[in-house]
Image 1 (tube, one colour):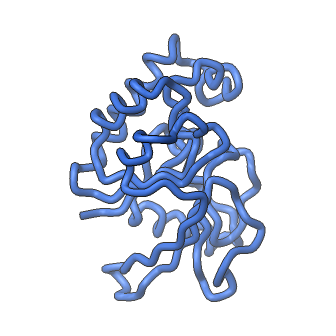
Image 2: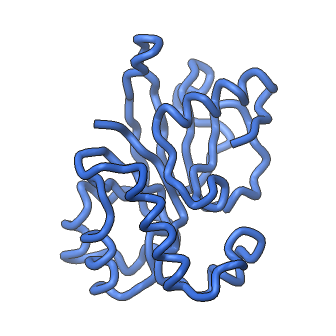
Image 3: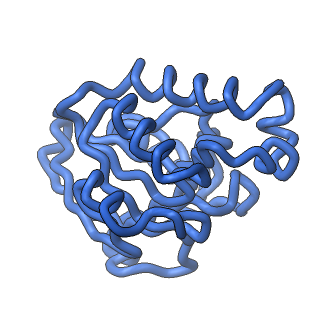
Length: 185
């Protein structure tokens, strides 16, 4: 079992192709957009993996949300974003949980240490235990926020429309730390 993180998939959101034209402008349709993200997701994530989706999952109908969840691998935890208003009622039960904020600790198998991580759709300038090495993972900014040590936008716009594994994030954070907060995601 692995842990994965992603955000801002915006499934079913036709206007995202215009709003994020630098990263999503090459898609001919929202259908093509959604199919690529589903394919990329499933190429990395297995059924038993844990997935933290940090908001703006889908702007489609309830039926489309249920369809997407049947297509996507992993045990999906949703941290609500500003575009997740349609995720309510029985749809919430399709996720492991739906929250606005969550903290998780994951064992780094390489170091034997536990990494504390703060999860929210929105980025923080400072977060719980940041001075003790915890990380803040977020979405919402579509790669437009200046990087700082310990904070990472895990949205698909910043990562070629792929989710990131805990190992991917560990590597990115190490590069950022070596470069005073600036690193290539």
